[in-house]
Image 1 (tube, rainbow, N blue to C red):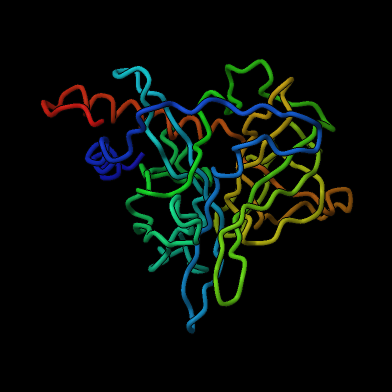
Image 2 (image 1 turned 90 degrees about the vertical axis):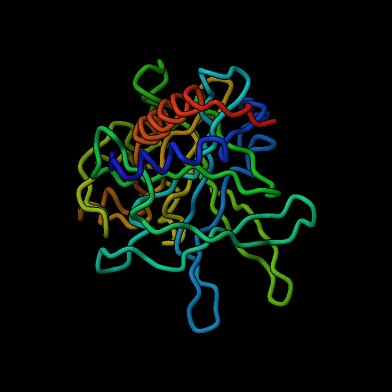
Length: 285
């Protein structure tokens, strides 16, 4: 993990603190997105020629504080390559599209340059990046860290054919823009990760889902898989994959396993907990 980013994460510890930890959502019926889960996604956009251009998708994850039970740190997570241009240089002028909690209208929040984002502390080349972020007055519902499939989860390797869905963000309307979260459904095709080349990110360890090729702006979208009576975060959608030329892989989309997200967010939570414990200021309400 980049040392400069660790100091940034510590500096904004209080700004990304939630008073109440969100609870995991459960699936009501097959083929239905659990209620409340649609508010964990946001769009990453840029402006070009007077137009808003969709670059990718991001989502929010909540990590419970060990120092202050009942509170959580909130992080924005996306695919690392969304923050870079076609030459591998940091994109400037990126913004996050969100729904305002008071008006319901779409709004934009400026995003920092790539150098200020945190990478996976154990696998820096993994296509994941995160920052502490809790947009004031925005309608969001972070994914609890406990809803991420990891190495310690008995369901960390879903079976082939298990139902999945991923969420992307879109701007709807011409004159009056409205934020919408879109759900796309599919099934687990290849549960065990395999080497896959990702355009703009290099070689990655990806699993696969079926359901058709994902559009480019879906890169960074959260992918959920049916895990017993609940849906858990399976990983990050990689829309820019260059799949095996074998026709068997036609129509599949790559998924970066959720453990990379868990590693990154958990480490930031540890750093921010230490920062809050060492501060002498009052705990935020």
